Length: 227
Length: 298
Image 1 (cartoon, one colour):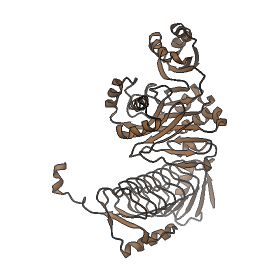
Image 2 (image 1 turned 60 degrees about the vertical axis):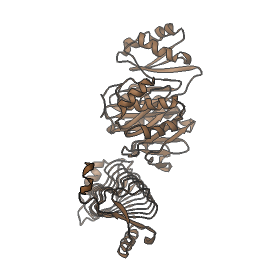
Image 3 (image 1 turned 90 degrees about the horizontal axis):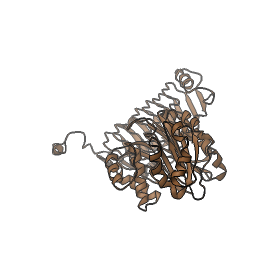
Image 4 (image 1 turned 90 degrees about the vertical axis):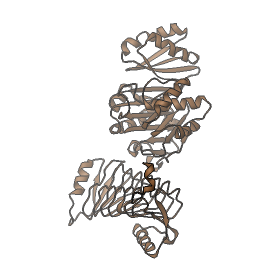
């Protein structure tokens, strides 16, 4: 285990050190102390390493992650795991706005609540939230899965393309072009796998599935007067 | 972008440290707002006395003999305590309105930042740490206070455009965001007799709350009203003589974190602002919900 203490080392040193790790590195396990809400902790990683951040992080923690597993033992500020490509990011506490925004792959697990715009413009990332999510989540989501074990806020899945949304609790309101869809066996299988990988004990059968009605894909001539 | 901090103490033993705690929080938010900074602090009141915080760009000339001049004009005792470009005038509470009018005649270049029994406001252009040092903010004590670091988007970088804004006795407001219907509300509120002195959008937000509370609304009800009447982006943190409130617009894109323990309620634009508070590790920390009013009072 390698330890980097942000009370004595700079953020730039931290990120440069972690970003320098290659596929075959022997230093596979890292611990970061005293994050104290700093921005951009453990961003742009591209090696199969495990990084544990002991405390709360600020903006954009674990952004653009590839391969690495980043585990935050506290809460995360806005834009955690933004544009993640692969790997795993686990937040033990809550996540602020736009968690997992534009993510293309990998798994983001939030053990607490996520606030507004969780998974906005998601493009293949899988996001599992054990608590609730805020308004406008999965806005313009294009691919991937968003699993919410608690409740969803207003305008879930507004202007959704093809991401799958699974919610166990209530949905305050659905956004434009987002509808509830039939839960078929293949969806239960996807959900079971995601819950298991996230380490969350919940029954797939208790969830409802939401997705795109696909009415916004093409221009509808009947709406011409609206422009 | 701007930075907001706020601290409302429940534990009296922390009161001597309020200025130091709030200054630390304020300076941490420098990169959210390096243009100007300000702080409103509720430092306690003396029976029957009012405090006016004044500011002047020609403080040497304007403040010299001001206590005597104002005292003769009012026919009452006035004391002046200067801090850099600001000074606090202490005078009998029933003379406060008259003092404002007399000050405009005696020293036309002078600005009144706040009036009330308890509130003092200090704000200037410059880095938060420099502003804090000039006004010795860290040595101040009090029951609650709010602060702001400004990155101007909407009106000029001037002392007058810095936050907090105070439009009523012992009231103040800081804002992260921008209002889009402030011109309409400025006209309406001015017609209603509310004092608005700048072209800044935030001052209109403060004036709106003053108007609501003048018409009998509680702080909570006044904050509730902003959700219907103000258009734009806002996270507001508000102080009154014994209260402290927070509200975010329904879109809530301006960041906010709160923490509460048995000793205090704290607000920060980011968690970074809260990390040095006592017991933060075990505090209840949460992100205030959109379109939801939070307030506390002593």
